[in-house]
Image 1: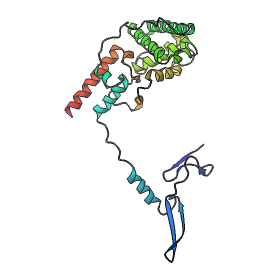
Image 2 (image 1 turned 90 degrees about the horizontal axis):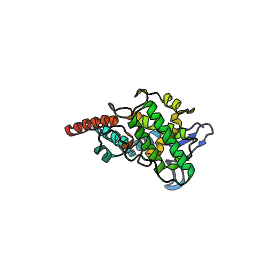
Image 3 (image 1 turned 180 degrees about the vertical axis):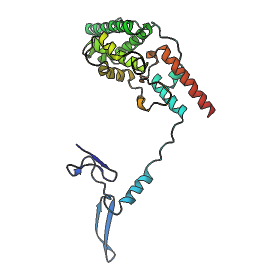
Image 4 (image 1 turned 60 degrees about the vertical axis):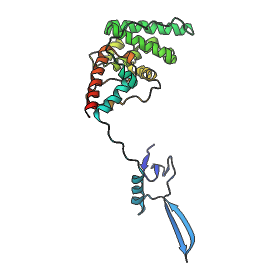
Length: 263
């Protein structure tokens, strides 16, 4: 249904002729006096009357002032915090490659189905990393799988198949590190073929991304990212970023801090 926004009336259903959400705001009050005595009063909207301009001016005067724009180095600092998972994570950035520490699968599961799903997804992720990427990327994939299972196991258990889980993880982690074209050299379709996955990996990848982000705040708007930074999908987790990715982020961090110091 078409909705038209009138600043003096709210949202109107112009096809039905009635207020869609909010009733008209009766802002003009008429008072009728006879011999100095009030005999009638009524209210009406300002829209379409000679007082409409006055009401709009009052609205503009009541509107809070726009906040001053952030300096470029401040925009970059916010972007880094969204990508890494907060200012403390940005402070602690290193460019050490991910290792195979702390990537062992859980020893215990609530049921057999959970064990089979996690183990099957892990095998698929290892196979894709060996075929399309490298050992360090397999560690990032495994970190993502373990994080999903610990924080939101339903995302793992309720997927249509282990391949859907693996495809979503590959897509999310790959996008977070700029591995897929047009940023990187790998095509997502190659990963889908390796997993024998018919639907696009991005389909379940969006679910995986949301789960990995969790409740760590609003994700960074990728289309509004600052100039001069790589096109990385923010997941807010440094343990999913490859050493080469974190090395780029370190250079960006140091440049932003140098600019802040010089301001």
